[in-house]
Length: 332
Image 1: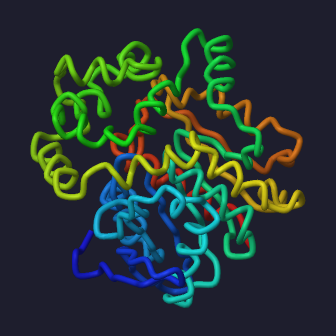
Image 2 (image 1 turned 90 degrees about the vertical axis):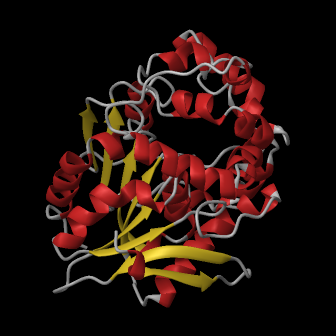
Image 3 (image 1 turned 45 degrees about the horizontal axis):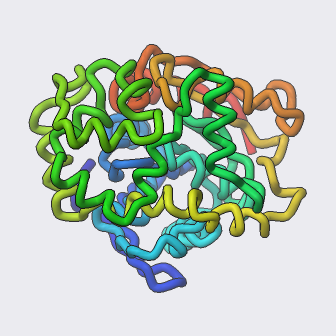
């Protein structure tokens, strides 16, 4: 993505966002891409470039805590209602009335909350690796969630959240960054079952300085670029996304969502791209989420990709073509 097309904005709550913007051509739609953890807007380069070549508009922000966007250390600033408002500030600045909102990983939660707080600004929703996330109940219990996942899948899936909830997580990651890279972008995605998902596993893996070869979709230069970025920017901001949930800030924030906005409007198209080899954001949970009665028959288009969690990197060309075909199939 052309560095000269990046812009900065100060949102209504005084935070700077750094984002890539390319205007739509010939009346085509604009897509909003929301990345997850631990990423930047650059993760969308392959997919975004495809759409830019086709004349679609692009808004690709560094999400709060990442890249050129502000990185506050207070988890309370990362509640989704506030970050949804931040995203709408960008839309308003570019005079974009509606977008196709596309998310991966934690970015899917941001896309989900746009459906709750600003459904009038979104013409369609696309979720990658993680399905639509309904509002969490105020009495959300992280420990109880782990117990349910353990019973359902045979392992906890989200045990690593406890580590990211710690205030010293950034320093531990920085001290063992090579191991962190091997774990988060795995050569063998099955390692997540033992080395990431269970409570305590991620810290044990990092302190052992366990490493593995790079996955096929990442070059050594790309790896070093990620390390350089997070050496400078640290993980204090990114881990706040987890702290808001574990510490109850997000569930309390979600409680304010009106009941009639708890799910996307049933006349709004949805695309779900599952990652076949994702052992944390497992496809079966995503498929189950979209069986909820709040989704209309035929509303959701689903496709499973032969990829690990980072399908937006490894399957960028295929996803670009699939998304465009889906977009061409509906009207506002």
